[in-house]
Image (cartoon, rainbow, N blue to C red; front, side):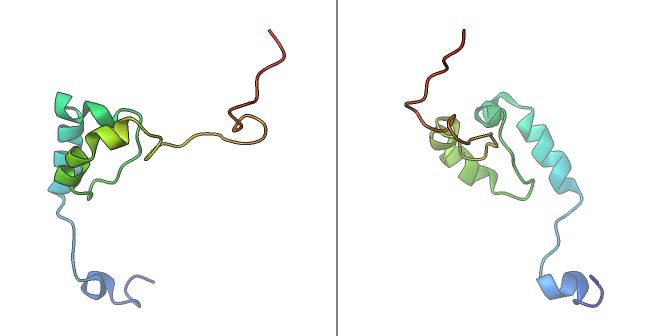
Length: 81
């Protein structure tokens, strides 16, 4: 299917094989601590992530959670102990 769609040439760019390794090395550094527990792509711009560090760390952005009735309602309280 990829060949029929034109392959990499159709997209116009190709990620280098060193990208995921370099990204994971950066993620292991203290500088990337704000991304702990977040879901990321290796080809995202690290400088942009760093610029948005406070926003990302203080929100549920880039996180996956289970939200549903009634647990997503801030007024809901458990009735069991």
